[in-house]
Length: 268
Length: 307
Ligand SMILES: Nc1ncnc2c1ncn2[C@@H]1O[C@H](COP(=O)(O)OP(=O)(O)OP(=O)(O)O)[C@@H](O)[C@H]1O
Ligand SMILES: [Mg+2]
Image (cartoon, rainbow over all chains, first blue to last red; front, side, top):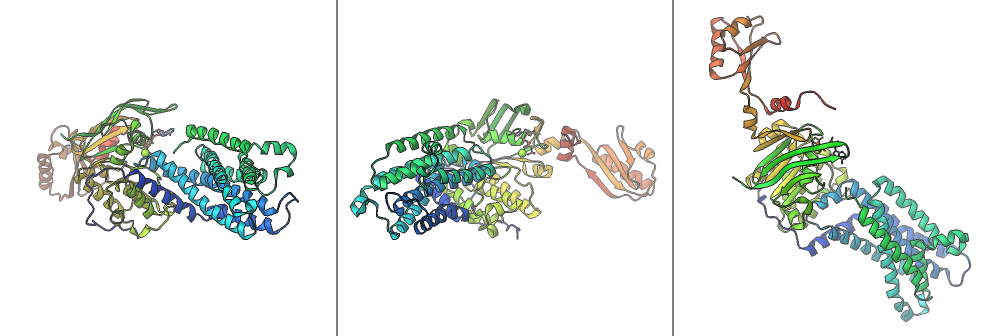
C-alpha cells in the first residue's frame, strides 16, 4: 500500500537547523557502515569465509612446499594479509563504487556530515570488520596449533609490530580501493577489484611463497603491497625481525595512492 | 518584505559546448515557495545544484542564506535541505535507516517515524532503498531533505512519478513547510503544481528566465481569454459576432461547440447569452476559460517538442 496517511500530529516543521555534535555523527556513520558491510552476503563471504577456508584447507591438505617451519606459521600471516586485502581493498572499493553510483555519497555531501568524518567512519568500519577477522583467524590458528615465537611472552612481544603492519596495510589498500572506486564506474570497479584480488592472492605470497614464482615475476611481486604485507607479517610473526624494506614499500604505496585518490575522487 | 534565501544573478554555466545556463537571475524569499518551471534541459537542475554547492558556476554570483555555496561548511549544510532529482541513498540501507541516519546528523531533527508515517513510508521502513518503487524513492528523498529541520529546502522535481495521493501528501507537506517559515525552492514541469503551491514562479527556458512573478501576475498578463459553450450545430457565428465588441472572434469548432475569443468580461458573457435568448438557442456548458499557467508556459517556450 502506498496511500499516505493524512496529517500526523506532532511534526513541528519550523526551522531548527544545527549539525549534530561531531562525535555523534562519527558514531552514527561508523555504525551505519558497519551494519551495511555485515549485511552484504558477498562481503561476509569475501572477508570472513574465504580467508578462513584457505586457512583450514591449506593447514590440513599438505600441498605447501617443505620449508623451514611448520605450515601454520606460514599460513596465518598470509591469511591475515588476505583479510586486510579483502576488507580494505576489494570490499571497500566495490561498496564505495555502488554507493557513488546510487548518489549516496553525493547525498551525504549535502548533509552536515563533514567529508573527513565520512572517511573516518568508513575507515573505522573497515577496522571494525578487521578486528573481527583477525580475532577469528588468530583463534582458529591457535586451535590448529599456531604458536608464534614459541611462547606466550614472545607472542605478545610481536603484537605492536603486527598491528603496525596491519594498519599500514589497511591504509595502503583502502587508498588503492578508493582510488579505483572514485574514478571508475561501479561495474568496472567491481570487475577490477575482483581481478586485482586474484592477482594479489597469487602474487602476494599469501598461500604460497614468492620463491615458488619465476624469479622475474617474484622481483615485481616483491614491490606490490600484497607481498610486502604478507611477507612482512611473516617476518614479524616468525621472529625474523622488523621488515623495514616492506614497511617502506607499503608506506610508499599508501602515500602515492592516497594523494592520487584525494586528487581524483569524484563523489558523484 | 521577507529576506532573500537564495539570490542568483547572471549565472552562467556550460558543460563543454553545451550552454546550460546563460545569465540567469532569480530570487527566492524566506517563508515562500518559489517554483522553477521549465522544459526538459532548461537548466533547472544545473541551477539548483549550483545553489546546493554541488557544481561550480562559470560566472555570476550565487548567495544562499547569505553564503557562497562553493564555500559552504557543515553548519551551512544543516540549514539547507536537499532533495536530489534522482538517487541519494545507500543501496543496501533500509528506507528507515536512511531517514534515521540523516536525523542523527542533525541536532534537533524531526521524529523520523512520524515523518515517514506522514509521507506514507511506514510500510517500507524495512525495505532496502534499491528495491523501493520510483514514487517511494521520491518520498524518501523528500523525507531526507526535511528531517534535519532546515530553513531552506531545495526540491528537484519533488512530485515526478507520484500517484495522486502521494502527490497530495507532498503538496501538503510543502504547504506546511511554508507555513512554518521554511523557504522552498522547487523545480517542476507541472503547471498546476506551480500554480497551486508557489508564491513565485520563475519560468526558464534555454538557460535563461523568460518570465517570473506570482502565478496570478503571470496568468493575468494579456487579459485574453475564451468562452466556450455548447449549442445546436450551424448557428450563424457572423451574426453572433455582430452583437459582440470589436476584436472578438467566434468559431464553431468542433460542430456544436462554440469558442469565443477576446476580452472576456461580464458584459461579453451577457451579450452572448442575450444573443442566444433572442434566437431561441439554449446554450449549455457555458464556460469561461482563463489563461492557465500552461498557456503562458506554452506561449513563452513554444509548443513544439524540441531537440
Ligand atoms: N554533467 C553534465 N554534463 C554535460 N551536460 C550536462 C550535464 N548536466 C546537464 N547537462 C546539459 O545541460 C542542459 C541543462 O540540464 P539540466 O539538468 O540543468 O536541465 P533540467 O532543466 O533540470 O531538465 P529536466 O527537466 O529534464 O530535469 C541539458 O542540455 C543537459 O543535457
Ligand atoms: Mg532536472
